[in-house]
Amino acid sequence: MISKISEGIEITIETFYQDDYSNPMKGEFMFAYRITIENHNKFTVKLLRRKWVIFDSNAEKREVEGEGVVGVQPVLSAGESYQYVSGCNLKTEMGKMYGHYEMENQYNKEIFSVKIPAFELVAPAKLN
Image 1 (cartoon, helix red, strand yellow):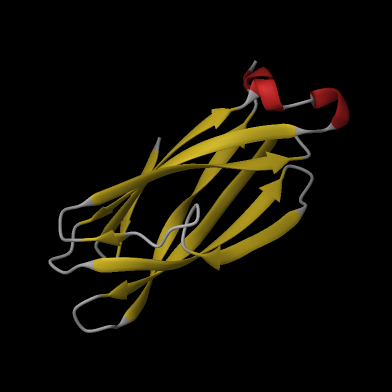
Image 2 (tube, rainbow, N blue to C red):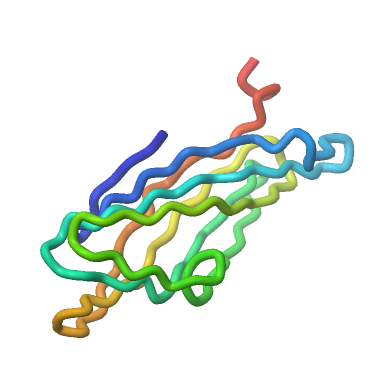
């Protein structure tokens, strides 16, 4: 599990290899990740956008961005948290992801960026 606080927002990430949805013989490796977003600020925030940078171990890079997360733009009051699960497919058995969330301070409407720390995606067979 990886955790980091940026701009008063704590991001915690846990990853899972999805064996049932992977096909190593065809270069298809599926991973899931659970992210918990916790607001340590004294003000309410709204998650507006996300941007991911994804790397396979063959150095292939792709970027994914869009509104909210899993179809929602969660609003977190001071001390609240929000958790979601999403997934990522790779062409290799190892990779990594990192990114950022664009958030809005609901008190003064200022937009700020929250870093999502880099985390590894590794198929269990690669760990042996």
